[in-house]
Amino acid sequence: MTIKVEYTIIINSNTFKQIKHYSKKVMVMKALNIALKDFEVSIKTKRFQIIIALFALLSLGMVYYSKRLGVSQELYKTPFQMLFLSSFSNSFNYIITLLAIILGSTLINSEIEKGTLRVLASKPLYRDQILLGKFLGGAMILTVALTLFYLLTLASSLLLGIPITAEDLEKLVITFPFSLFYGLVFLNLGLLISTFIKKPKNALILGVFLFMFFSFILPIIAGIIGFAVAGLPPIPNIPENTTDLTEEQLQEFFIKDPAYQEWLTKLTQTSEKVLMISPNYHYQEILRILFGAKPQISEIVSAFVYNQNVVEDRPLKESLSLIWQNITTLIVMFLLSFILTYTKFMKMSLR
Image 1 (cartoon, rainbow, N blue to C red):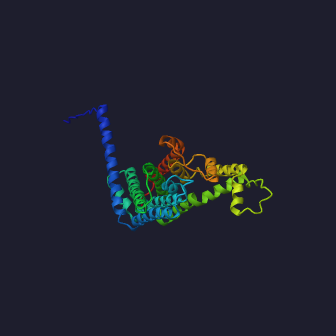
Image 2: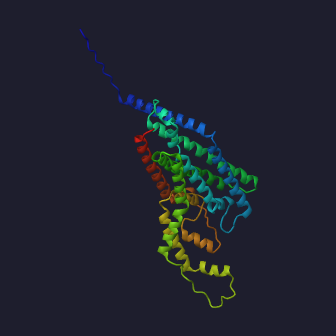
Image 3: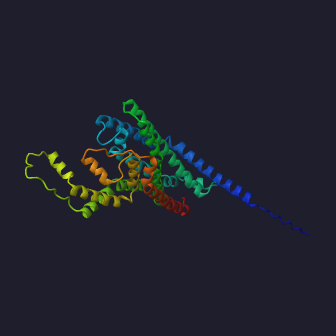
């Protein structure tokens, strides 16, 4: 005689929420464990040491040369504004881009090549936990490198006698999360490359190419398109008695001409429309606005012409309102590449 016993388990809504919350917490903890292990291994590698050394050299170099060149009092109000609004900031932009995309482009495929990812996947872990852990591990490396850069920039400025105002310090603190998020955009792009290209060397080559494309090739293309749309610069009406003018005076004649300023504004605005597909452009705009640069290109052109400040006093809330589109675009780029990476990683072979 067989007795069949049936059990009925009743889970109310609160219990279900608690189970769901616990499962999410476990998932995050496992991902964090992977991230911490990756970070622990990475900080012992030469690659991490090179990253730290590059950020340290960049920080010291930027501050040293800004001290040597001095601050243009007519254009900028503080040394830090000149540091982050002049060509010095391009180096900072480039190094974040290059290091983030190189770091991300070998996070997955190098583990597959070594066979360690297959071993990791054999454990009671979901693939999304592995992917999240790898991403967080790379994010930790970027956070440490950027933190070191910001701290060294402050320390070397104080050592070299460059004054740091409370406003400068506030702007540095505000720009840090944007710098980190910008690095994460390219880390994500590198992860996408790492899931599609199995050979780490080939992935590195593509990563370097994308760095070159966004940093150098696309701006050249944008400039060519800008010239095609704006045409050749207009020739101003030059007075007859200009034989004694120097080259600098003649150049000033061109720059101060209203028609030339209008042409230059059109050229720049057209180029910027092309550059909007680049994360570099949006990050540069975020830095520029947060450090107080005038928002309109025509205002900047006019300021350069008449030796006026290219910066202005502006509350933080107003600055953030001017860059919300740039921030939104970076978020969209981040999410798009992450979704593509996630989709590919869930289906790819780990052998």
